[in-house]
Amino acid sequence: MKNHHDATPLWWKYCRLQVLVLIMILLSSCSLDNNNTGVMGQAAGNNNMNSMNFQQMMQHAQNLLMNAHQLKQSSNNGNRSEYEIGTAIQNAKQAFWASIQKYDGKSVQLLQAAMQGYLQCFALEGDVAMGFVSIAEAMFRQGDHLQAKNFLVQGLQVNPKHEAGLNLAKMMGLSNVSEVLDDERDKQNRVFRKASSSGSNSSTPRYRTNLPPEACSNANECAKVVTNTGNNSDPLENGWDASAHKLYQTQLSQIKSLPTMQVSFPVRNQGQQKNVFNGFTVSELGWWDRINEGTWESETLDVFDQYVSPDTTVVDFGAWIGPTIFYTAQIAKRVIAIEADPHAFASLERNLALNAGQAWSSKVTLESVCVSTPNDTGVMTMKSADAGNSCSSLGENVEWACGGVKEEWQVRCYTLPYLFAQRGITIDPRSPVFIKVDIESYECALIPSFYDWLVGEKFLPTIFVSFHPQITLCDEEQLRGVMKVLKLYEHVSCEAGKRPLKLSPTNSFGDFQEQLIANGCFQSSEYSDFVLNGRAGDPSWLKQFL
Image (cartoon, rainbow, N blue to C red; front, side, top):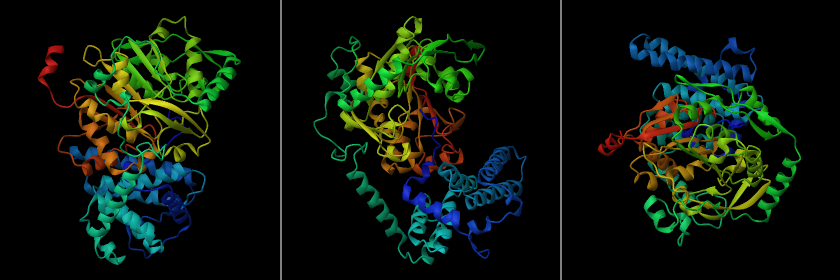
């Protein structure tokens, strides 16, 4: 789940945590010379904002950015002049830079958002490379040549012929820019080759041989290794070690001693219909008050209302303690709930058992396994800062995402096509499939692995995937893999379906990045929820179902 994360932009893909720390130190303490000719220096001063604190300044800057975005959109109708739009963008730049200078050391996420907002202003002008170059210039003038080079390289990777970037490269003494860019690509490729897909088991090579049967990557492969397709109602083997069993038993014992409480989702509109949900019973944890109050992730529920119908099979991972399961099970035909955190699984299992008398509860199948890439199938190590806190993952960046790692356990992983074959799940317009993916930093490894499966399917499942801040640390090959999967779909949008992207087979990787930036797809955790729906194109075979 994503209750506590803010997301970071995709185009910050080569920045590492140490870069962020250096930015914090540099930008919170520096005071640029008023004679600085760089864009950052131009945006620095505004006496009207001096009385605001960091949080107030950020809100002000975000409002200005939204205004600039709206003016830019309305310019398509000829209602706004270029001067008016340019002034609005410059005001937003100025406010974001001023907010960075006011950073109070309390919220890294807000500082990240300030940097994102500043770069988004350049994206609105169609020149995000200039944003990176201007940051590089500011760092160079402050004497931090290493980080200046890092940001300059990012700008030139967006646009290798960027004039200001090439001029700054000369100023910095980088005579052969092409060689610098090649060196950076080689460095990333070396890291890519050395790293495991999940980063969880450093001894596991990126590409394994002799993969187990559960590593099948598409429907045809899985049909050969799953002989009892759809007939096996037993849970998949979870491969838990002693640590996992201890976490499960401890939580199960504790949660059984808690009193229960009644929870009800609010009445919601779905077109001309209203989804009215039965109340349900859970072990009393303070978190469930959010459901009763109607304050929990309305955007997530909106997506369920739009794409889950009485004919839909829902596959939900990670299911956590059950809020999404107890919602979709009251609409869908069938729900497969997957949760690999044994602490959270104990709560999920207990909460479902408390509702055994509800008609919808029989639709739910629980699995205490993980879904992985083919390379990560078998028993893997999952990590968490605090088991059960909705931030457990196979992902290599879980330590950053969750504030450190305090607990680890072993769990068996399967590919999604294997699970589909095992459970007899097929995809066609009469039996739609909805997949929810919320796996705390592992998305960049997993989503690209879906390509070999989905490219051979006539009808695609709707996928609702929550990306997270760690996407900035994904390597370029993974990000290109994400783009390949997105291109299979007719409709792709971020902000839980509200911000459509225009992808086509001819879109380059740069085009893809520019669209994500322009749409602010990683401005916050809510914006980074992507919905993928409908196969691209208009295949003739679809008519037989209509």
